[in-house]
Image (cartoon, rainbow, N blue to C red; front, side, top):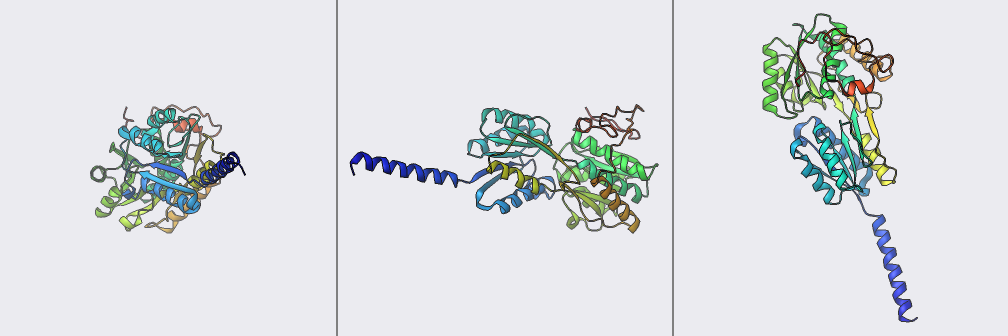
Length: 356
């Protein structure tokens, strides 16, 4: 065998080994969280989804997360993951939308997924959950359980996801209690236990005997229990923090979605799609109904089933805004997804203004 032939065979063998090694390379998947994974709420649930994905796919993937990332500093964090060889990056807060798009333009071969946003690109998908479905159920429970007819709501930021949740909660309460009123305190944070506690206290000082929240710590729930009031958890089952106060909680279950999307990336079938799952798909799950009479529990279970099977819609038409105007019904018998996803107004009966 001459020298050239030996060289050629050795080169071919090397190429074959390299290709095999490349085929066995793990898909690097990154996650960016707005809060700490120890919030036991929103960011915690995303990380539970990551852990489930890692467990399901084993050595096919390698996952990384960055936690407690401020929205105004998120571009740097997202780019850090892109530069360190991550092939698929999930960014999980509304305020990460524009930073995700900017980084995606710099790294066109990296795939990105943004949670709770609405802007997509060739390499940017979007996904969210229909949290408002669960909030309608919370509203019905609250409407039945309140003794003061005053409900309190700790809100994060005035984005459509939060505003639609407030509206759905109030419509649910109103459907079973025409005398109910709602008080809203804007905490202007996703995660700040101190500020969330003060917000809950302020609501109870205004007569609220049931507290709901769209912030991520268990602090409002804990304050309710201290005061002998009732409340709802947020994003995960928070029973452990206030077993005497929690009526139920909306659980965000991202596990199935993360497993599916990473599998698509592994198979080379990933596309920049939009996903909006709810009770039917299992992306929204209700924690056990507790601390309530049997008839209220039965109502909650019936409403959960009706929303799941499509016979009850929180935003069924007619929907009237707080000015008394009937909102155009673009979804046939309900408000359209686009109307809900862009909601920046309150329904009739809410005596407050959406912050601008």
